[in-house]
Length: 78
Length: 185
Image 1: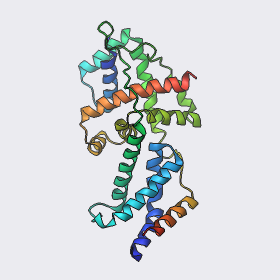
Image 2: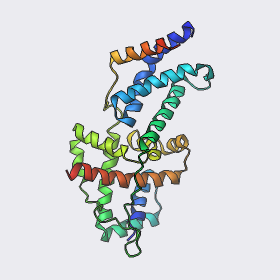
Image 3: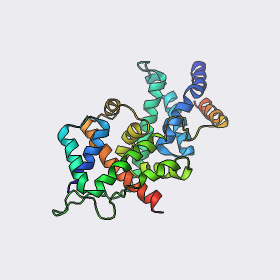
Image 4: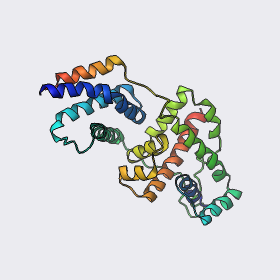
């Protein structure tokens, strides 16, 4: 029962190419382990949703007034 | 301070405030705080203008100041230490298995359709915020901004296998956090 190792391989597989032994270990383990079978779609979902936080989906931005206030603060510096 | 510096400072705001704010907001998820960090970055930049020798671009230089400020903020925030939790059993019989109550249910794919909901975005930020401070920057760089692994390793001075280990631990924690925070309400 080594979910710790198997989930590590799953994650490593998203970052780099796994060797054949690692791939087989994942598949074999998932045949009988519900947790690690569930882990994979969960983890893929995380990859998808986290990247939606960046880029065009602007979370928030500075208003014109706020930028002017920053300028004023900088001008006051001595 | 002389005239040229004043002019620089004002154009700095026009040119870099948005980029810096964007970078800060997805890392601290707090409008006022992100704004203050940007302002502090400009202030530090102006104060140490003499040290800026033009070896890098102004943009790179300002970003390096901001990054340090964000890391300082995370460290301060973490001073209320919580004990590291292991999601895997360490007892002999069930070694390496998921701890009871934290077993993946495979329900997260349900949330994808709900991404427009602000509450979900808040939950995602909350879960990133709950990570140990030394993982946060790496996780945001890799999972949110999808930077190349090689660049993330260089920026954070870690090896490729360090990165795999950190991303694995972080993902296990994030998965568990989101399942609890969003699906088990």
